Length: 306
Length: 141
Image 1: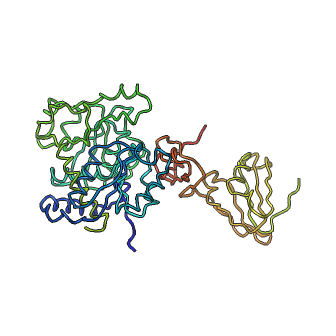
Image 2 (image 1 turned 90 degrees about the horizontal axis):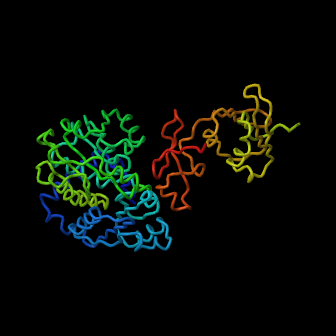
Image 3 (image 1 turned 90 degrees about the vertical axis):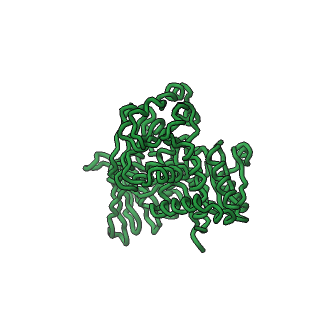
């Protein structure tokens, strides 16, 4: 019997596997009709213990465009978790009704617990401030489509680097490509966690920290903005104090490279001013679209179909 | 005070004074079916005071775990009254059910039945990370 594959952290995939997913996603974009019935009679369970718009919708759209079906819930209150059911029991139950599971949970490590009990592949669709590998695949796909490469880039990560799981996963993915440099732009309280700095140093990656977005701007090939997430704070005062630390305005792009791209995992609150949307460097809505294609490729891969 | 030597079993020597009971509980020595002696606050030329545990019986103990608590401890394996092996303790690669993750965002904080497990991430600084949330374990002061 073939060993079950799960995707908890982006590092569960090799660089070759990521490149393969990107190739398949490229092919899906070019030949959508070849994939429209490929998952007929397959079911994706979307178990979202925490609200989400993009991730859940893109998983749903991805499975629908592959001709499959989707079932699940979109908040813990509408599942048996509200009655005290454990993650492992919920997953064993969901394994009975589906061929593959995409799971989001506010507690860090919950999808790892799920993977230890599931009888079908589990995809981590975000666990607290920890990992969000499918957002990373989305980001890699976006960078690939816009820059034509994944190596040789200087990437600015701006905003909440402490709780920002998208940032952590993106770093873990990008350190495996050649000649990638990082510029960390955050308030001191939202600095990158120690374990991520350890990863960067262990990989011998060039990185630096700054408190000024303007100062970092001219050298960046990619500017990755993130939201300061209210749900990650135990103390509202801290959130209010830090939420407006970095706001990207169109005028600030004057010093940026012509071909730099501005990315954001969305939703944004006010960290990217709407006047940036019309700038050709604004890539965040394109990024959301890429999320659907790469998730289609991932579902096929996890089901052993591509 | 006289305590007999071990025929076949294990002698844990140079345990930090006062830690004997902790080690006793950690190894589950309350459950073994053989003679066990804890000798506390013995004079030691090396450390001033030390604890010693003697286990007289052929029991299977998870000695790897001891490295987490005290790499200075001496573990002597005895057979037929003869010292046959001195086990050199080192930090174990994983710790299962020994320490508990204190990260309130970790799934282990919500689901009590999950066994806490840590992996050694930085041997030089004795850092262990929770396998679920990756947060470093910090000992209470």
